[in-house]
Image (cartoon, rainbow, N blue to C red):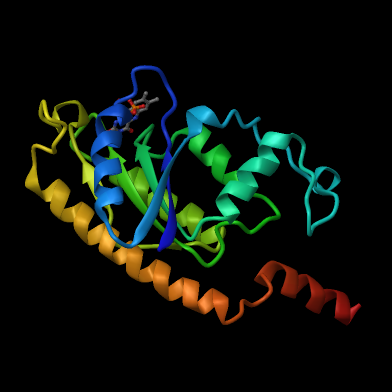
Length: 212
Ligand SMILES: Cc1cc2nc3c(=O)[nH]c(=O)nc-3n(C[C@H](O)[C@H](O)[C@H](O)COP(=O)(O)O)c2cc1C
């Protein structure tokens, strides 16, 4: 089974994310491929990113500026796949979510692992612009953002009294997304086990040093 972290990207009181979480917990626990864990950024009081080489120390066992940053890097590093639940804020993702991704620093925790997204919004866009931004961000972390995600429009009216999505496309999209995420997770677990390249940024540094 793949170790899946379901990362909740909104932390504000009254968040609409709470409409989505119970349904998504059911979907991910019902899926046979995953050992799923909710990672709520409310439970991770990460400081505004302030890491630098002085806070890292030993690259093989980084210190970081705060124990919670170290624990966060360990949490991310131990997983095989990620499902990020993000609202759309000003056509992007919440600043706290970006900060949490930036805080995975020097550990290459997301590297060579797949990421899917559930986006949502108060309007008709369904968080699509947040998802597009996330894909760009995750490519830089060397994660593998997948194509089939879930968008939820008009989120405050998107679930019925039983917590089920009103629009059947939401469940259908989630099933496709989770199957794709499981496929990529298994494929990349096999690939990682066979051996990973040293991260490109370090190989490039080494190549430049060799020329001096
Ligand atoms: C700071 C902020 C910016 C927002 N920007 C957008 C936006 O660009 N597009 C959109 O469709 N909805 C936007 N919304 C509406 C949110 O998507 C909607 O309120 C959603 O419920 C937020 O998720 P949350 O309640 O879980 O934090 C914005 C809301 C906030 C608070």
